[in-house]
Image: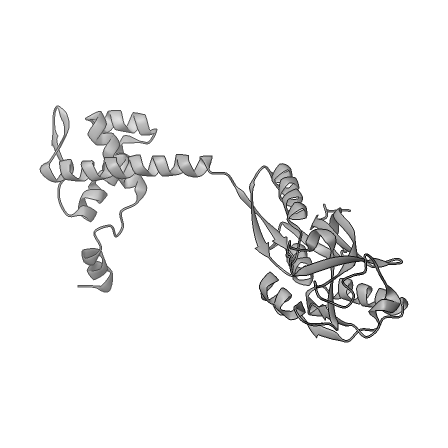
Amino acid sequence: MGAAQRVEDMDPLSGVELRHLRYFAAVAESGTVTAAAERLHIAQPSLSQQIRLLERRVGTPLFLRGSAGMELTEGGELLLRGVSKCLAELRASVAAARGAQPTVTLGVCRGVPQPVLSRAEELVARARGARVVCRQVDSERQIAALRAGTLAFGLLRTPTDTTGLSLRVLSDEPLGAVMHSGHPLADRSRLTWPELSGQRLLWFPAERAPGYAAAVLASLRAHGWRPETLAEDDGGHTLFRHRLLGRDDLIALRPHSGVFPDPDLLWRPLGPEPPHERLVLAVPAAPGK
């Protein structure tokens, strides 16, 4: 016995195709090969050949052939029950799949304020008529993914090289200082650049958004503040506040909308001319643009 024959013996579905089951059900329901062939829009000899092939694959006669037509054998009756159930479930699954709402992926950089994210989701859903699935992707990686076509939309920080992308600005806010409520500068309603002398900066890894990081740090230097930076962990708000609490020489920079409500932390505006955080919705540009 060959290997192919052994596989067929082990797997009762080996060589059985969906069309064979449809043909079998049509003949069983129509009662004759002629009527079934007309219903299926195929030639009668071809249909008869496919039924005989199915019988060989199943390993038992499925029909008793007589002058009155095709009558199911006991094995045929058993097979028809399963085939009818299978085809009904398959039709229902196909209908459900057709009715399912398509999805589109939106890359989102870290620390995006909720109102900005909601606005981005609304715009993407309206543009594509699809359910939006958000995935955290750093700004720099979004650029590469958008150009490669592996990401449909991106919500990212600028400035960065956005060649080949179309942009829509969703947020452009000045950065302010975030500190713990007992910080020596907490009693100021607004901070000036000289007051930040000696303060260190809780800052994110620049590789996440190198263009934005470079622009902000250049703005700080232009105003005379050259802070030592302390890398921010990837632990969300809990570790962010933990780093700031009790540190009288450490602040962070955030737009006001990007600060979580927290009784132990304060936000203070900076001036004059504070750097801005600019968040944009990016999509690959149409060809020729």
